[in-house]
Length: 313
Image (cartoon, rainbow, N blue to C red; front, top):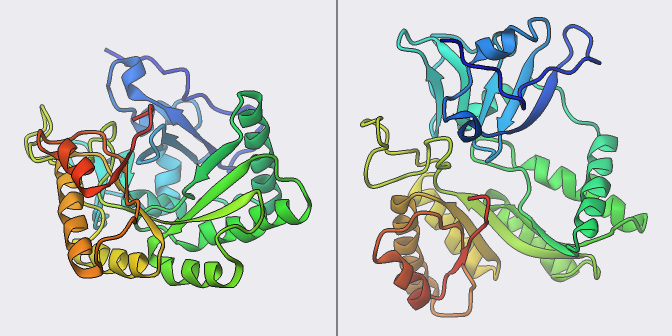
């Protein structure tokens, strides 16, 4: 039986052979749960490299040409904190999970400054049309990727929009946790608010992947996949040390956790941070807090941790 081509995975008619086709937003749950494969894209776009990210940003699908350009084949090892999905014979299916996506990002054409600036303006107008006047932007960083892109967006896009009086909505910016010292210096020089439009919030990090990509970290294995408990995408010692330094500097810390084990690990880590840095109103955020063990919910309240929940998760 041939799996029907889902509507989100359509090629672009205005691309010349060899040009990248980029997109995203697909959700395999919409068409029954089966993950897409490179062959789905090869049939309709054999002459253009294609990369389409999943709606949660933790997985993407590449066609065969894109994988060839990226040098991904049967011999390519999974990076730490990521997975190259494979067939029973070990061949890559085209799906890359979490840090494995960096293999593709390293070869994809870069988005121009003009396109990024236009994207901010379009997104701002879209938000205003729906009555949204303030957003939190945690950047495009994820483990394994360069933290510099978030800083480039800050200087090339946000500072440009502010200087040209083109800001339409208020934004609270979070930066990659590995650059916490840089954020601290920026706040020391300019204060928390650069203007009424731009507020410097804190730092963001990750502990696991996502449920839809089968990479959220759980105590129990995924149903039908007994060897898969999800992915821990950041080393805990490194995460603790950076959290301690960020917290000492007065930065608000937001860390992504979706699986119940990942949330428990973060709750335990916060206890250590409080023991070492003392009690204060730090407003620690666990981003998503999607799946919790039975005793975890009470710990959020007791420890004063914000469960930063989004409807999409």
